[in-house]
Image 1 (cartoon, rainbow, N blue to C red):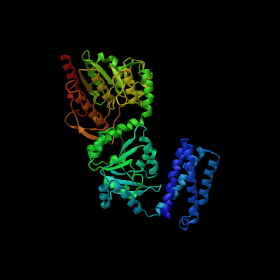
Image 2: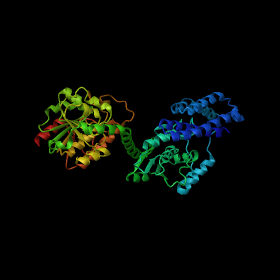
Image 3: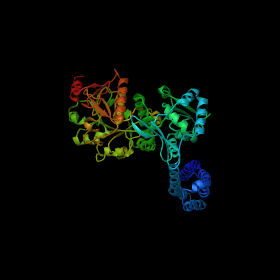
Image 4: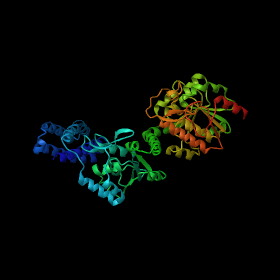
Length: 552
């Protein structure tokens, strides 16, 4: 009886959270439907604890819960849908969870053999080989199944990176729905999900749209075994919209990545990847994809204003770059070593600065020819704060913080980036070139100088590493030390090693690929005097670069 009641309360908790979400989204038809089912379920809970001898032993104050339930029903009669959602969230759910935790503490949990056999047979019908492996497989002790406060299971894994959970310890179904809503798009009818877990997030994705198909890639048979033994995989069985791939060597995943797909990465599953080269590749995708998703509305907001406030397009100044040498000033800590040498640049050199160093250069009275801005977040405005009247022309990516172009009083150029649909459409409609961002302002500055026809390009301040435990040069907008946990040891330009973040590694690798594409056409020089070693770039001191350019 106790295990049966745990399952019943679990179902009620799921319904309660669904009802709250529907009411707060003003989806009244769906909310009233789930509310009706929930009410019946809650009444059953009351009756069971009052009438069942085994449950009566818990001596719960059912009169108090009856009062709470009456409050919900009164709000429903008054059609006060805001109050219903609040009462469910603040009173009913906490009470159910408290009872659930009490029941769980006194229950013995184990594998539901009937459910496990049902799951195994479902897998057998679509992959007999995998089913045969699962039949004899025993999960090691590093994989632990735990009941959550909602009565569902979660998975805890201990590996080289530590111990961590694959799903919420509170309500993994609700977590799965939030996950699915984040990644669902009407533009896709097929998704590749990396990471099975116990399947909550995948089931939620399938429920959102009955017209989509999902391929699940899971490299760890222990995780699949956990899902079979302790999950409910009824959504997988005989479902032509779902395909589970056991991909021990990651070969199937790599083949899928070559296709045009919507890849969805379950982050705990990403942490669990054993092969470093695969993990790094997936981490790069995850970081980039997360940034785009989290900034989607901000991108649209900025784009709308920037196309109005930037009165010229970057293509118009091609003649100022074509056939000339350019210095790109990045904001790495090594910039402090040679920034003063910019006063001695040869005539005809084009100087392009990233926005992060703009205020530093103005304070030094070393004015660049152009300043580039990329970041979409409002905090980017601090890079021009107090120097809005400066007349150095600026170049704003179409999705860059809109306040830059709104407030800056000098000349403003727009640059549209490849890979953003609105920018691509705008550029194509107006006959403009598109530029690759590479994810950072230094990378888009490089692509810009290449596409505008520069002969040679030299970087300073492009550390892409924590030189001297600093991420940026002094007196720049982002100047600060770092105690970042995510540090990787990489080769340094001086032949030693230096620490870098995964983002720095991503930018460096992008630059290396972009430089390789232009081999024999454009020379790119690293005059940073510190930081990471960049393949394909000539290493020179800035003063030697200037001597070289003077002699050309």
